[in-house]
Length: 140
Image (cartoon, rainbow, N blue to C red; front, side, top):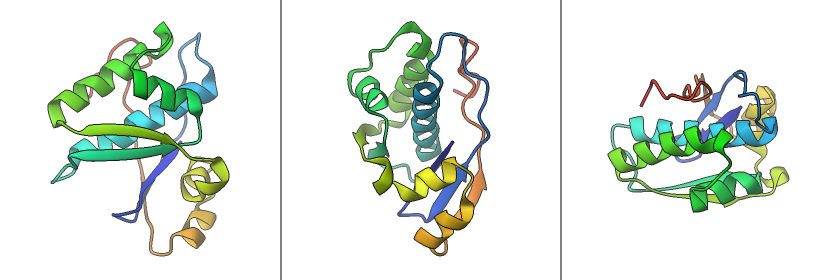
């Protein structure tokens, strides 16, 4: 998984944690990555009042727009709701075609040289996604 902050020139990459048994794995990881980016934004010294996150997964856009999903994804949405209430961030998740999301795509595939080509000066960090796969969210 990978996401980045263009304004801060920071990129983040993570190994894939085990998904829950009934999850569509690509969708699960995309939703978990959006949640991770939201969690990151809440930890900033000056969190934004509005946050736009772009993903190439339309299902992820839909669940974060409606806050409705199959039971398997409810823990991700509940964690996000808690973060949004505490931080007062106005979140919008938008679709972007994968070929236009080159840096996040490169980070998610571990292709760091490509990410650095598209974003010179990018600072790269590893991250641990929130633990939501066991029906709880310890970090929230």
